[in-house]
Length: 302
Image (cartoon, rainbow, N blue to C red; front, side):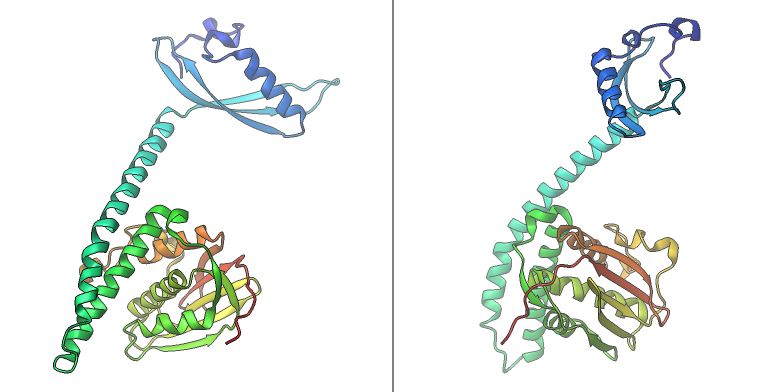
């Protein structure tokens, strides 16, 4: 890994290749292991025989005690490329956050102007056209909100307040082109969230159910002991795809305008609220999205 012959390394002090203070590292490892942890992981830099430097990760474990002492075993691996990938990913995410903020900022003003003037359109003479225009502007606003949550997470979500689950569910359902689809609600709790973003979450799940389950799909929203679920009786999600579907850009509807943001937003919002989010098979063989570790709020009385 570092280019030396065996004879050059055997018996040499670790400072021969370790770039950092080897004694301090050794003391830290010894202290950590003596605290009761069986294995400790440390990162450092090694000098190769050619004069290059590589980043390594060392996992240090105690062997069973013999005669009052412990021998140790070290497993060292080169993590230079891994760290480079992580740094590149971090830089890419920063650029994505910056780009998303810029796009959102640039779109907000013309969107606001468009919504303002759409309110002055002749509804009586062209109700269908005005309806489509208004819906389109609202949809653009929703996409901006979703994009910001996916790229910025905590920074984009307002403070939580008590939200009635049933209200968010029905408001979201009304925004979806459900045709012959049916909604069954067995959830009446109140949780801490942002009403707008919770509504976005349900709408994305409902759209996903209708898109993959068909126009006559039945969607059920119910309560769990520490949260809620959204299930359908559609075709379901294959086991191998149940993590992939949450990745940003993943979509099976690219030819129909799908951007792969919907379920990525669902997962990211769950992360922001520290909910546990998973997908499994529903009782009817379709998809079932479960959200647990959800904090209940005092019931809202009207």
